[in-house]
Length: 278
Ligand code: RET
Image (tube, rainbow, N blue to C red; front, side, top):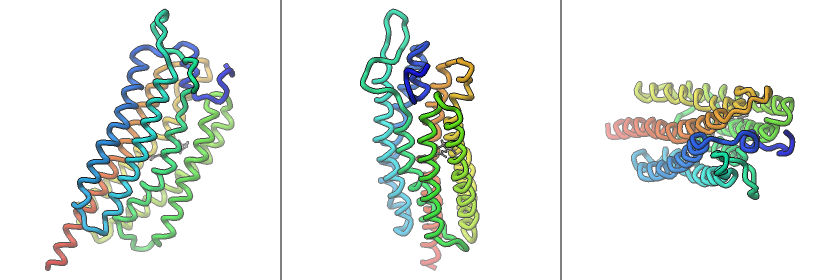
């Protein structure tokens, strides 16, 4: 079982029982859908940037940064899948090829290293903090966001070979994750003060979306174990479920989040223009 070193569990399935046509194609297509959405949304954020007043536009610019980096990294991640496994005519399944590379989810993690701080900064350019200090929250977002991803990135290399290392790095990462949740809750509750009801409701929706979509990532981290890898029960559904989870999480945490934030900025822009005119 150790011939693959610290490879992700996708490869262990690829070398043992292989992927069915359905399993392999769902992953290939879901990965493709992922980067296609990022490119489409890139245009959306560029084309709608003038719908908000200038002071909110940095938020849209950050969405653009997120889209470009996600598009490129998810494109590489999708190619990494199709170049790692090859179809075997005798067995009618896809197996790990003798290509130059194994499949690794690390591209995603490095994408998050860029996107997580950007997504967290984004909201600070839309809401007005009433009590907290902008620079202090920004620095804490940046610090805990990066630390959460780097520790998780290291941990994911051990998902098959060393459960203790996998669990410890995952637990350290979770501490930073809780810190981010705590900060975000504070930012959103301060942001709700004194703004129109419609914008308050939208911010409430952003909080719900944030908690659910960000929780999907640790869920995907644990997935090889949720599907019973220790018992030797290698199952391709774990792989398919994990890649679908990542794509759903990415679309929610980057695209839908960005659209909802832009919506808050639109409501605030309208209200301020009204106040100015009056
Ligand atoms: C890891 C490791 C295991 C523990 C935890 C994790 C959290 C990851 C999160 C990632 C969010 C990524 C986003 C990307 C958008 O581009 C690293 C999986 C808690 C919350 C929002």
